[in-house]
Structure formats: C-alpha cells, structure tokens
Length: 147
Image (tube, rainbow, N blue to C red; front, side, top):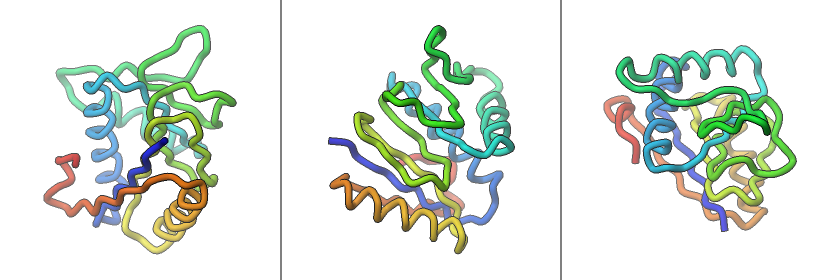
C-alpha cells in the first residue's frame, strides 16, 4: 500500500519550494530510492531541472528526462508513463494524482490559496483511493530540514 506525504511550506516563495524540493530529492536519492518527478508545466520542469543541478556544488544528483533505453535514478516527466518507473512519485502538477504501484507519493505545496486548493483536491482524491496520508508543515527555519 502506498503512502502519501504532503509537505506544506509556510512560505509563498517558489525559490524556497525549489530549494526544499532539491534537498528532499537528495535525501531520497541517498536512501537508494528511485524517483519520478511529474511536472506538466514546461517552465516549471526547466526550473526544477536547474534546481537539481544547483542543489549542491560538491555532489551530483543523476537526473534527466525519462527514457526506457536510459533509465536514471531521478526521472523528470511531463506526462505520467503507463507503468510506474520509480519507487517514489513527486507530484508537481494540477492533474489529479494516480499513484497505483508507487511506494510513495509526495507533493510539495506553497502556503497560498491557489496551491492549497489544488493540494486539497489531491488529498481528497488520494483519500478516496484508500491511500494513507501524512501532512508535514514546514516553517521557514526548517526549510533545510526534511522530516
């Protein structure tokens, strides 16, 4: 059974969201989990790609566009593959989540009305799918810490 995590950043700044996301991806990668980042907005996909390159100047997070011929530990996708390609899906989209066959579902949400409205709809959809959900409120001083 999958487990969903919603990280609610008590911040309205997308830069803080990208920093938190980069640190989260790094932590999960070091736990030997494979990751699929689903981002359906091309501009946001480019921002996340750059944030992962800039995450830590002395380390490297092997990531890129998903390819069946060249699987990576961290795949960036703009549409969900028919079959799961990773242990974890990090959902950065307004598209309702479908997480069957993923171990973990993660959504990183800014604390603003439009983002929270989308997150609530996703929370409701996951609840209806019978998915266990944990919510983490992250305050500004904790942005560098991942629970």
